[in-house]
Length: 315
Image (cartoon, rainbow, N blue to C red; front, side, top):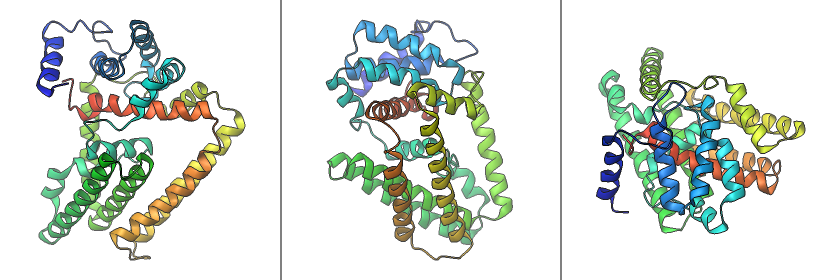
């Protein structure tokens, strides 16, 4: 759809009093972000009227977890059962409006490593010394060039989505470690406080939290319940995730503390090896249906975050 026409339609929705899918704004959710998500799905997948109506209900059922993407698990399960194969293929294909920064932040989100140095550029520059600023500029340039290359390869079809996500996560993990090596402890504290303030402001502006939004155990349980995971599956997954996190943190700490002196390329390759091992083991935990629900959840979460966190549309 023409971008100007999209903007016009979105603007009209709000100007006419937001006669949206969910009615008036309330304390437990953000109807605007849900509206925009459903609008995206309706337009891209040609949803039937029943699919739209049912999707509204499943989003309502997840509101207790807003603004976390755990609010989308029930919808993902519904879509897995009710989309046609053609609709699923369109949903899981890389979007035409793909933006590399969005994918890197999505990876941050899904791996619970929310330290968005790349979203705090102006503030970071204000607290750096002249020498630090020179190093920082080189790091930012390398990160941008590396992400653009992966992004272009993905768009061109010369890289699979799995390969692209692995590469992008490697770049972001390197950048995160390089930032921790660059900054002093005082600067890190300032940055963490600024990030917390920005995140709190964002959440308040989006209508606050659902009652389970800060309860990580309940958010995990929502995924387990929707996927119908057995106790053995849950135990194996949690063990793998702990090992994965530990491996990334060991690599990070060794780099920051000078135990290893990796180039960016070497660091990215090391992250890739950790990710490959993790995913090879993780994929054996789930059955085919569970894996498809997970993929659909990730696809709709990216769309939801576009409207709720990144704010490119729907404001």
